[in-house]
Image (cartoon, rainbow, N blue to C red; front, side):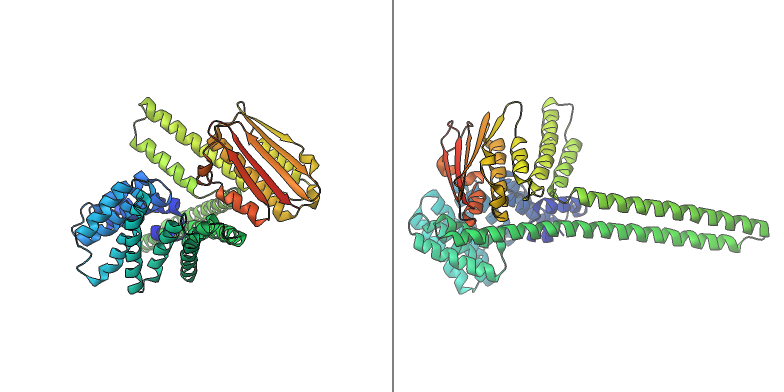
Length: 487
């Protein structure tokens, strides 16, 4: 079940399921290795890299077959690359190749190609371009010889990133190849990665539009999967409980029959019959009331939680586990617990706000203003100017949604990163174009780090609506954004 959840992008749910599996693993190294490896994958995809390395290392413990260590070691190397610890990654990946453990069996060549490709990418990231390129080409050549089309996606993406700064045409060619093969294999994450490279290479707005469509679709699909998977688990548990009740009921019936056979007097028989009748009538109505209450609670929960992500349950579970495994008598532990609880509370409110439906009819301007105003606090003043200058009734509905979501993402980004005391959002219109100026006096950032701060999705939304967005920021000099949107 944890593996199925990871295939569908539900990494928080996968961690919860893996935690349920732990009591059954015990000292069986084969199962513990599998569980720890899946834990490592989940933490890697959630960008919790230190935790990922820990679980990958746990997966290696107790494994006697050296070939079984290749995958976790390779995964550790990949995590080191993501952490920019290129020397550590090179050391681990070269150790795999130097041991020659992948040269013994033809079936191991696919793994060897993967290790070579990752090693080349690590060298490239370190700045050793020539050595990195040779290894990347060697890995691609091996994969093509093996007709490993799915593996070629990774090689093409690495080569596309390699050439992105020096030869945009080659970079685009490799990104397009990766996109085509990923499309054949229905591999959404690789398709999005290829599109992001094409977008970064200024290859046209059509790729940004594809990115938004695919990204929005996969979010919907994965959220639907989480809900369906949770319902399947709920229904399975409910069926198991009902079967247990039926077994108990049958046992009680058999006992009643046996007792009835040994009764010699009518009075005893009638008394027993009345007692059994009263017992089952009471149980019947009790179970009926309990079932109705459970169904009502379930329906209510479904309505309230339709916009809340399933991973919140996992955060709560982790917090409970924290309280069970840590001493709350230590002040720092209590502070950590308070921070965790505050984080959960803030996420519940934030997710609820971010996923509320948008009224794009007559109350749009009022709702937009209310959304921006919610970011006011004792230490922060949000100023909204001239929102009434825009005739919102003439704006296309999709563009209203885009403006609402982009401003919402700007405010969320400001709250998380900028530490701003004053935020000004100014609206203007010349009848054909909407102009929006966002300014805050926060700590700002380096211009080359803007995309890394999560604003790429915001830019893609604006571009897909034929608008423009420009960012102007420097460290300690605030953050400024200018948005233009045709009606």
